[in-house]
Length: 475
Image (cartoon, rainbow, N blue to C red; front, side):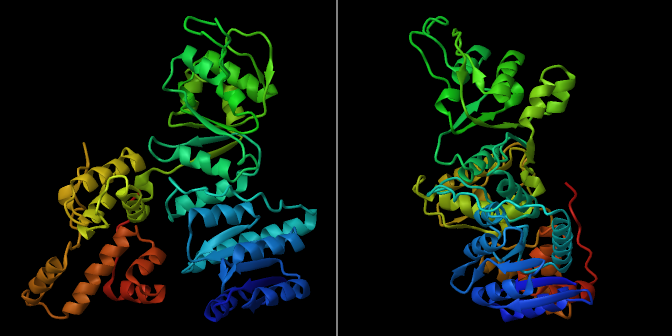
C-alpha cells in the first residue's frame, strides 16, 4: 500500500488532491497544519509528502527543513502558487524531490507523484541516502539582476540549479547570446558552499591569447613587454571561490591545455614563472558556440570538454519561452525607472502583444535594450507601440492580434460589434478572447485559465462549446 501525506492549509486543495490521488493501492492523508503533519509523519510513515510552500503564516521551506531533519530519506514535493526563481532553487537545494505550481495540471501532478513513488520504492529497496540541507544563500542575493520566468523551460532550469549548486563540480552553461548565462552562473555561486568567497568572471572572447593567459594565471615581473610588476591572475584571486569563464569556445588550444591542468590537479604557473601554484577554485564555463563542432574541427580539446561538462545547463532562447515576456517587461520597467529618471509605470496591451510576438534573436539582452530606449522616448506613464524600436527583423505587433490600448479603443471595438448586425455578441467576444488567449499561451490550458481568471474546467467547457483549436507555435 502506497501512502501519501498532504500538508496544505487550503481545505479545498486537500480534498481535491485526496480525490485525485487516492486509489485501491494508495492511501492519502490530508492535514492543514504543520503540527498535524509531523504527527502524521510519525504515525503514517508516508512514502511521499506533498507540502504547500505557505501554510498560514508559516514558511513551507522551514517545514521542509524540519521534515528532512527528522527523516533524511523522506521524499517531498513542494506545492506553490508562485513559481519564482528563489522558491524553485531553494526547494530543490533543500532536498525537495520536485515542485508543482498552482493551479494544478492534473496530468502533471499524476506524473510527478508516480515518479516520486517509484523513487521511494527504489530508495527503500537499495537504501539510497538523499542529501539534506545546503547552506542558505548569501544575504542580499538577487537584489539586482535576477533570473525571471515562470515558464516550464525556466522552471526546469531552476530545479537543475538547485540540484547542482551545492555540488562542487564544474558546470557548462550553454545558450544563445543574451539568454542570461552569467545570471545562471551567479545563481549557482550564490547557492553554493562557496557563496562567502569570491565570484570572478572572465570573458575569454574579449582578450588576446597573451592577455587572457595573464588575466587568468597572472604574470611575473618582466614576463613580457609592459609587465612592470608581478600580477596575480583570476585563479589566485578566486582561490576558495568560483571562477566564471564566459565564451570558453574562443580560447586558444594553448590556453585550453592550461585550464585543463588546473581542472586535473589544481595547479598552474604564472606567465614567465616556474613555480607551481596550487588553488582550490570551482569553474563554471559558458558558451554560445557548438563545442562538438569545434572538437571535430580540432579547435577545442575533447578532454577539456568533458572536464567542463560534468553537468550541463542549456538555457532556452526567449522565443522558446514567450510566456515569460510580460513578466520580464514588468521587471525591466521597474529595474530602469530610477536610473533613467523615468515616469513609465506600465505598457499597453498592443505594445506588449508586439513584444511577445517578436522573435528576439538577441534574447533578453535585446529585449532590455528595447525597453530602455522606449522608456527614454516615452512621454507618459505607459509604453506604446510608438515608443518601440525592435531593430532589424523586428515585428511591430502580432498579426491579427485582438488587443486594445485604451478604454477608448475598447469602446470602438464594442461599437463595431454592435453595428455588425450579428447576434449573440457576448459569445462572439468570449470566443475571440479565449481563442486569442490560448494562442498567446501556446495552447497551455493552465496558463490560459490563469490569464483569463477562470477555472480550467470552465476553460475546457468554452473550448468545447466554441470548437476552438488554438495554433501551437513550434519553436
